[in-house]
Length: 144
Image 1 (tube, helix red, strand yellow):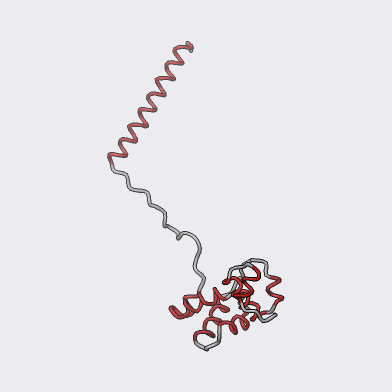
Image 2 (cartoon, helix red, strand yellow):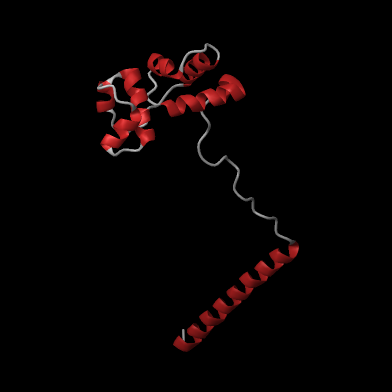
């Protein structure tokens, strides 16, 4: 408001220059009320807002600050990212991406060989025989 640039304001406030530069951009677009009401949460923008803002800057020649003001974008960073994506892939590049690991991406169980199946069956039968021997010994000991 006093006409200071971002460098002198950064020195006076002991805040990084880039942060003050972002604040200045938001101040010029929306005024001081928005700066005071910002709560640190990221804003969510629809696909339509993204496409409209990026096409206005890339195709329409609108300045980024004017686009921020016109479309209600609170920061320059997402607008720059949208413009780069829009230049590279058009409106489809701005579609939201699915989150998380894709379905079926886990490792598939390996097929067991005949030998492995027989070894597993042998172990199971040996365990069963050992169990039956202990049971017979308990029955004979108790005299039932």
